[in-house]
Amino acid sequence: MNFLDFPEFNSSDSLPSTQSLLSFPELQKAYHEKQFIDYMLNHINTLIFVADEDSHFVFVNDTVVDKYGFTRDELLKMSVSDIDINVTQSDYSTFWKELVQKKTMQLHSIHKDKFWNLYPVLIQTHYIEYGGKAYVFGAVEDESYIQNLLNAHNGFIILTDGKKLVMGNTGMISFFGYPDFLTFISEHKCICEFFIEEEGFIYHQPTWIEEVKQAQEHDAKVKIKNPLTNQEHIFLVCASAFDESRFLVTFTDITELETYKNELERLAITDGLTLLYNRRYFNDIMPREINRAKRNKQQLAFIMLDVDYFKRYNDHYGHANGDNVLIRIASTIEYCFSRASDFCFRLGGEEFGIICTGNTPQDVYSQTEQLRQNIEELAIEHKGNSASSYATVSIGIAFCDGNTTMEILYSTADAELYRAKEAGRNGICPVQPLL
Image (tube, rainbow, N blue to C red):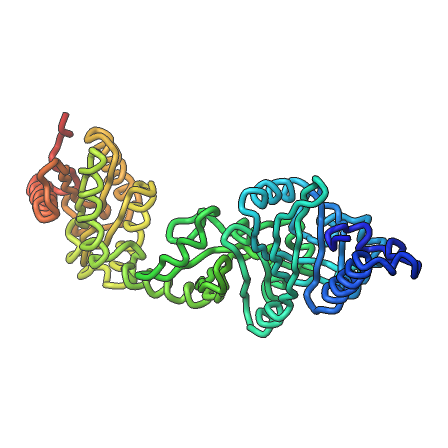
């Protein structure tokens, strides 16, 4: 007899039943060997199973029977996929091909018992042949302690191999609104399926865990929409190696902190009165936009405008009304230059600036002339303005070429603005667009 003779091994009927047969030394030796192997396999804590190439169980030890709540006969009519929630027939076929080549493999998975309780497990598998057939011999180690470890943490923590979710704590399950882990992974293989694609956040699903691990000089962050509230949350993500193939990943909700941070950053670059960008942000962004225009071989224009005779307006109408004029002009500037590539600034006092990229010189002049007209058509009374009965602006434009620096562009626009004032105000210089 041989202990790999699985049908015999699972049935006491096959044991020698007569004393006459046991009188032969060879059979006596085989019988005692079988009893010893049977005892060893069925009286240890490790769950032992054997399955064939089609994933059907052909042997399970007593520990498996006790653990999963099925009878031995029930288990021997089942397949691996009946207790392993991560395995489909296609998955098993792929696993089998790899096992044939490697002969031994280590796997992490989730098993379920007859009552749908889940057990994280580590499976040591071996490829064996007997009687002209091939089998997988599996020794299963219960890793439920890992689930207890995860659930002991507040917030959001998972165990993953980087491609699929292995385990998640109760915080993760409650965040996504699922009743249990089994329901979650029946619909989603990886938590990265929920990541929102946005600049500054990790998204690329196949490599997300590698990006988290490599984020040393900056924080790794992901953005996820809560399916219960439909609100977007920002998580700080940290990953550490749990073993050779799995990673422990913590998600810390920093949504509120990020909101405060973004608001502070916005206030730092925004003019408090007009809500346009301020001079500080202009100094930061102008070199970047010049370099971008050069790199992309795009036309960049810098437009400067100044409210005509604004000191006279303040002296006559008061500073409160003067502030209101600046606010209304700023709103008009944003209305006329509203593309994502347009940047509008209050450079100081009654002086404004616009960075406009991608338009031809003719388009820039046309758009700037429309702005000049719209401001005059606000019909803000200004008795001290010799150029009009209303508040108006003078405008200077400079264009970026391959050798232009921020200093040259600014001084050129400023000189053109001065020329517009010298020409009588409420106008644009140069007078004609470059061809």
